[in-house]
Image 1 (tube, each protein chain N blue to C red):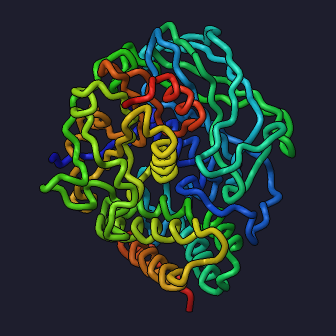
Image 2 (image 1 turned 180 degrees about the vertical axis):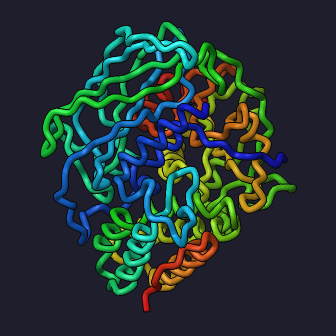
Length: 323
Length: 142
């Protein structure tokens, strides 16, 4: 139990700019018409904790000045190294990749090319896979897209790449964390799942049966989500937790599923110890995160902010069925 | 990484439009702000106005409720909550809890739940309380 100061990362701030991603809406367009003003679009990197030498996912969100979100289809990323914070250089071309649209869970994946959508209709980010950065420092991505109604776009965004990951990463041993479960005697319900503070009950008790320590000790694969559905700053925690719950119902025979609430006491800024062990580094708390831990106790994959449940499902299906 | 945060703040200004950035001081004081940006009086009023519109909806107007909430209200509630947490974390918490309840209502399959009217009122009160906490006066639903 710690009392911590929160400094949200730039990536979280950028995610926050992606309007209205908290929860799955009923869609349907509603009564609000899009503002027919200009199509000034800005891009922001949504990836967290990028580092050198390992293929990683790279996410970008794009929003127009009238708060519509660029959605659907594919866009293209071209990366360039621009030196360090201390010594900038002329951009040196790096890898390139196509990026596919990843919808916020519960929103449509759409078809056709990129276009601007109202947040109540669609919202998400674009993801390229397997991007490897060969140097630490400040990088730049140029995003090119032909956005229906807005025309061809070429957008720039900067981001940092570290020498090493700051947060637990693939290839590392999972921390044997003794997180709260529904059987914990010393934890208020809201410290197990913040949604219990509104309903008085844990909405997804199946995600609070296991500790990471027990899963690792028993050699069980585990999918672990760190998120605070109620007190989520990044706006993605609710749908992400719901998506993990949906996966837990389909793949209960492949892995154990664990939701770790971030806050023990939001009002007094007390973070759960288990969350701090995994997602609090250098005075920097980020969420949501999803980690896939293999039967040997090694972290096999991780996803920050938004992700495609189908992609996680593919990785879960690689595990043999458990007895 | 202060430099990066600064650049992101600039991008947010661009993303959110000029209305959110670097203007409109209230009685000489800068408008309240937090990790997600500045709360302007116009945007805060628009969010409250959206909640007031939601109040008048009928149970079968689930799509309209979703449209107003996610297109006009939801993002601003996050910005207000982030700005409020520095000065009044209880008000911030109450706002986020009420927002979560509204999101739960809007996940209904066909019609708005019975608790919808009460939940809109609770969210409106929590929003106004948060705005009072950061000394940003806006009009309620009248």
